[in-house]
Image (cartoon, rainbow, N blue to C red; front, side, top):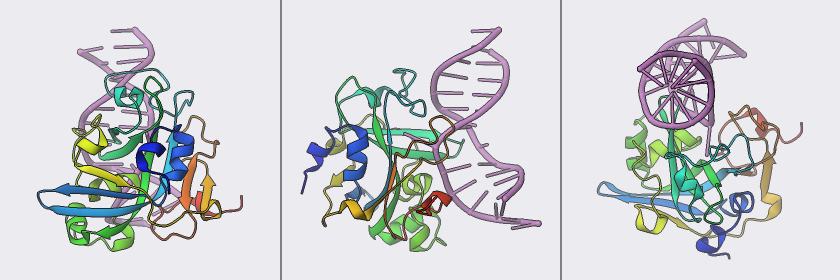
Length: 200
DNA sequence: TCCACGATCGGCT
DNA sequence: GCCGATCGTGGAG
């Protein structure tokens, strides 16, 4: 099984598939939450849909650091999205975490989200995932993973190539046709979307 | 300075 | 399926 630090050195396109099945956790004063990553998207510098496409800005600076940092941004006036920066320093690329399967700390995640949410709706979307983790601002953006309250561990089970489904990315206008979204086949915790239909 | 818009979600029809 | 909420970001002027 590949170690996380090894995966984070790779280009986002490779890392995005290898992060499927990895365990994401956050430890705060209120307790521990743990989830399994089931859906990702790759973004890179030559990609018109990527925040790094127009070069480095104050916001996107973490994307240009070496792999292993967080890149967190705010969108639609309401939502935070969590990205894992991958690849070499100077290259602007990252993997967007889109959905995860809750494993531990369900009560805390429900509390973070609003108590009516059932387990299938806790983290099946990028905004929901951030909310479940208790992310309410971008203060962790740019932080090195091992020094932040957020941790990544390698998958506990081997994810076979046949378990991974590929589709176009969601909610973007530029480069909307490129299949750089990846999710675990038949996993009920993946975000709901028409691209989930395998044939096209 | 100003302003259009977005890597979304949930509630309503 | 449609639509409103809500505001940081960065490109234009």
